[in-house]
Structure formats: structure tokens, C-alpha cells
Length: 223
Ligand code: HPA
Ligand code: MG
Image (cartoon, rainbow, N blue to C red):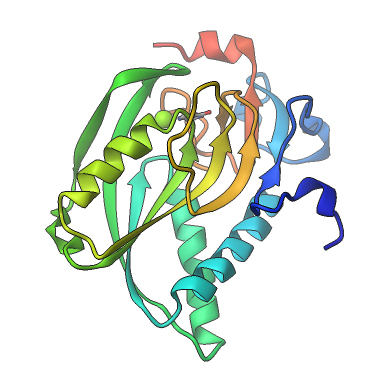
């Protein structure tokens, strides 16, 4: 591996606390956010390359099974769609293949940049389809782990055969995380990030890169 320094044995890319991100001038982004973002924290291309590798790891572990992919909305829609595309590509081009169903669950626990105590499960499909199935939960970001713990408990009530979790981002938070996801894209510092479907009060989902928002933008889009 070319840059083994940034990859730990537990197989995630670790972004250190002092990483300032890339200057905005190095990339393209929508003009409507030019005042609102401070830096490009993880460029879209790197997200895609890392997701491709996660797809391969998932295929190596679960290939030849049937799985139900459970996409955690709204933040997980980009990661889930891209991960599923990569797994489809692998299924077309190797002797292993993974039959996937895709279901959705919608959660909300954030207001502004703060996690609220209560987790809202806002509908989605009837999860009794998960009974007896191998389930892959696909979530964009895991921070305190509270949401994931509540979600896992919820999913378990439907009697799945197996549950795995793929998280694109895991935050290093104090007292965080019961069980880390089985597949992790990036471990990041405890900073609020947006883009690639991650929002701040519903803004910034229409940004390809994962970015850090400015303090001014936190005020501008506050509710
Ligand atoms: N950004 C957007 N949504 C989030 C975050 C974040 O950093 N953490 C938890 N939900
Ligand atoms: Mg959100």
C-alpha cells in the first residue's frame, strides 16, 4: 500500500485532528455555498475510491449470500447508492455475486449541529421484511453511537439472521461508540461536516465533497 501511514490495522483511513482540509480554490463546488464552506475536508473522488474498496470488503465477506441493504436516510442516500453501485459492479464481474434488496429507514436526531436526545424513526417501509435476513445497515456518519445503538435495537426486534453495519464516517468523540461499524470509510475528528448528502438543517446535501462549514454559515442556516 502506498501510504500505509494513514491506514491503521483496523482498516479505515484516519484523518487526524490537525487536518485543515484542502483550500476551496483547488476544487469545484456550487457558487451558492462559496461563503459557507471553509475547506474541502474529503474530496468526492476519495470518497468514491474508498467506497469502492468497502464494496470489495463487503463482497469478500458476504459474497454469495442474499442481503437486505438498509439505507439510513436522509444522510446515507449518497453513500448507500454509490456502495450499492460498486457491489453491483463486482457482482457483474466476478464469480461471486451478492443478491441485494434495498430498503430505507429515516432517522432524525440532529438540530443545528447538535445531537438531540431523542431519536425519531420517521416511517420508511415495514421492516418485517428483515426477519431471517442478512442485513447491512448503511449509514453516512456514526458519532456518539447512540443513534446506531437505538437503530440496532430496533432492527433486532424484527429477528434478522445477521446484522452488519457500514459507516462512511466515524467521529472520534469523547465517550463515544459502543460497537464500531463493521466497515468504516474514514475516522474523522469531532467536527461538524456537511456534503455528500450530509446536511446542516437540510442544506449542503447538494455538495459533492465532504466539507467543513464556516461559523457564519452555522448562523445563517440556524433554525
Ligand atoms: N454532519 C451532518 N450530520 C451529522 C453529523 C455531521 O457532522 N454528525 C451527525 N449527524
Ligand atoms: Mg442531518
